[in-house]
Image (cartoon, rainbow, N blue to C red):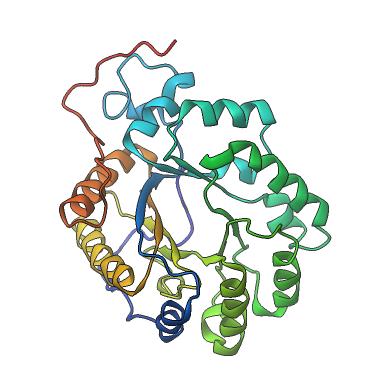
Length: 305
């Protein structure tokens, strides 16, 4: 499932450096009442269904029904994009849950029918159905997230604010903004940020070549959600990962508690290589204590049943 938003063919003139830390974020960390001395880094990809990962993180003869099992041996979260197009049946969610370990987290993407077609309006029943169904994932449910359309401006802010009030208390949610108006209107961004902080919701940060404004560095709760889009393992991908490692280390010192880091490539076939570098680098520098066996020299076929 490739990501088209913000993709560029020519990245030679892109400034990939991370913006400075955000003042709101610094204050949030300083004042957050739920600070605990714990930290978890989670690494994931945008899908587990890529057959081209056979011989990388899946055995050569693996069949599609076993892909999630092998995926969960190499990553500990998933950007669950399939839920953007429909709510899975409860037995499907229960099967997924039974396939992964206790530490694995699913991060379901909210319904496109609500975010893009309804523009978040008149969606109370949709929200309740979605959240009720996702609870079938139990302790493996991580942060769900809603992606706003690229043309969803601050003029529709009231619809977003009302939408955020529909979610059950303590439900974990992230919001991804895409229209430039959210990053040029400081008053509106601060208003939204205060709402998200009050609810414990995250503001998704997207790192992609063609839209550097969505790399906003606004952290609204001690949980960070990052969608990192590489460029076919170009040398800049690895420098950018290193920069993120240093930035996350800084956030960790300030009180960051959890990270969901989703590594994209223009084509999913290269996600294991990107994940391999991220996992090894973050573990080496003690950002993560998860032993990511992303790519092995030889993957033995296992009996799953």
